[in-house]
Image (tube, rainbow, N blue to C red; front, side, top):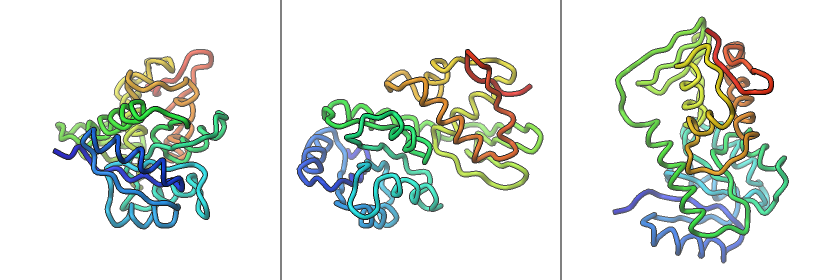
Length: 229
């Protein structure tokens, strides 16, 4: 049984072959693209379950690929994992700000990559699973957990699975302050190894997307975040 379709966008053919070989053993269907342009076309055409994209690509780089995937309605909700040889935190942060769900730094072990893919797909599946409709309304902000929809001032807002999970968790506990590690567990899961800064990046991205409604998320200096009562 196929667990899902993985699209790998990387200009290193050997790496795609290695990733493909190992992920196929894990039960995934793997497709490869060697540049950003063809990778984008494949994503729009085939709608894979997850995209792995290298940061450094000829022509359209990985960050632009991520940006374009998130800007298109057809591909906006496809989870993305960035593959990068760069170890600088700033590069990872930019990827997360553009909507990537996770990142893996090269060189990586096939086992680690498979674990990351499994974790991201698990989070996404949880977001898509049918649940009793429950609507949270805070001023002009509406969060519909049943439909997985968010709107601000009557305008629909497209969030990634991680962003929705983080927003819904905070809104479901108004007034309570959560530390960054607690939010990592709630929105990302214990199986993912990330740094506290990752949550800051997701909060910043959420506030930008929510525009005026972003004011509902408050920073508690020295501790974490809370949702206004």
